[in-house]
Length: 105
Image (cartoon, rainbow, N blue to C red; front, side, top):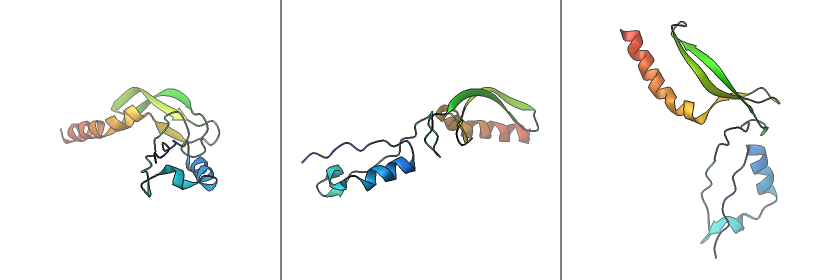
């Protein structure tokens, strides 16, 4: 029997509500539950699930000697949580490496 495709949830509350009213056997393959992969929805708040507002912001480092301009951030109008874009989060290790190298000069 083919299992159903695992749904993507906006937050933990929605996932819990779904699993409270869903038969998990519909998502099983040969008696094993399919692996669920949490997929972050970039413009959704991880805390409350509300649609976040996108904004560009400047971020300063190294005693305001280094500024990264137009960084994409999201802010939830409901609960106030902020987060960086997925693209910027992937660049943070490279930025940190560059800042360490600058500090050692």
